[in-house]
Image 1 (cartoon, helix red, strand yellow):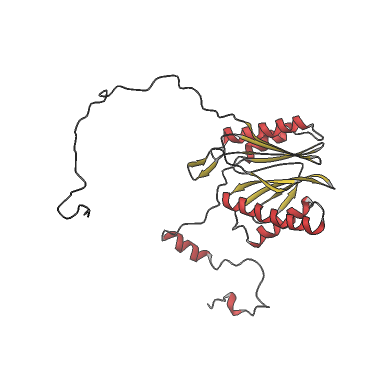
Image 2: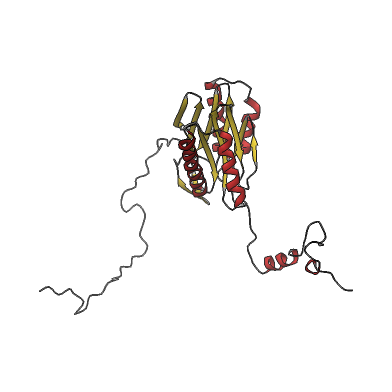
Length: 274
């Protein structure tokens, strides 16, 4: 029986639906040891909340390289404009340079128009850039700010989709943080109540997700200005050792000892001095 390939159809007359022609190829590559692409674990907990008079953003401060803690006190809340900030989860370089790029474009926009940029403008620039790279730029973002429309909060996924929400969590610790948000968030919260909610949500991510840890950073954005509360909470301070673990020389018996000379000096190797 003759088989029909999709290439035998003209471009304008190809059948609709999905094409599974590469399925067999992928199975063969996998059986020969080729690595199957996997989703990258973000290793972060970031949250945002809209309260009565503004927006509160929060993030943990642990940066990881796989199973290694690379930085215990990094900054994940990035400056975008005087009236907006952005939390980043994913690849650290992607989040930092993506937010820097959009921040510079918004500054040029502000200088050209003489007005503060709107939050939706920053959101549109970010989503268009991420969509252009089809998820290859690993930046999951929470954008918050205040403009003429009031306090606004957006989530922006690496492939470019966006949501406008009253509260949002992202990162590998987002499920633990979302459990706190859904249990305790209420409309028209006061400033301190919103900060406490963000603090508790980040703590939930820190204590229940291995990719999140260290301290809690909080940023409060209002029409009057921005308060950056760096290391607002430090729930993982190093404690005092209960015992003394210093042992006298010779406590552990040396079973064998071998001394080798790794450098051999022969005539002619020494430096000549005039």
